[in-house]
Image (cartoon, rainbow, N blue to C red; front, side, top):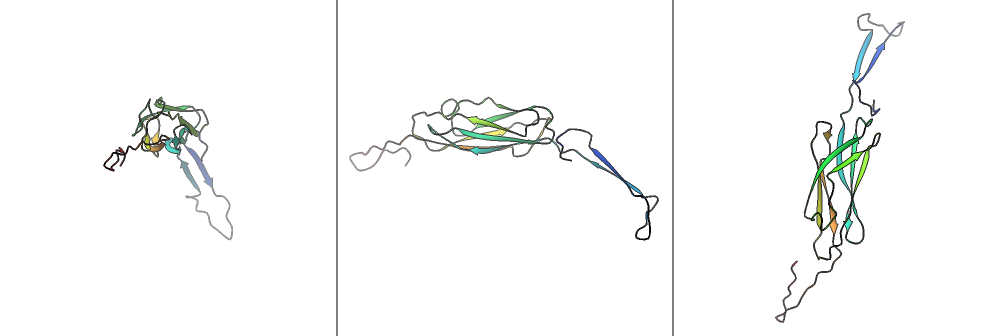
Length: 164
């Protein structure tokens, strides 16, 4: 019933009694039982904000739906074209939801590495677990560079721009 509490499901028993001139109740089918199953615990990740060197950090948003009655630690891996420890501070590989919390944020500290680069990516992928199901299992955010590319003109009129 959307109560975010794990249980064996809710049961509703409806019994019709009475009768009258407008309807008839069958004595055999005078009651019905419906069991409402719990929503499975589901975890997702999404890009919240991109980052830029020397301007802003990047943020991933993790969400969960289902049983929120206890804390939950979710493991993830990070990949992409940005280099951990050079372009951003290394990530721990886990995010923890507190009890009754349905979202958690992972701030990625962007490093100003003084190297001219194209926009890079950081991809977070949730690890599978028997404790939860995966919703959106992976997402990427962008790290924009703030360094200017140096173009050297050679005497024959060509450039030595490594990005051209």
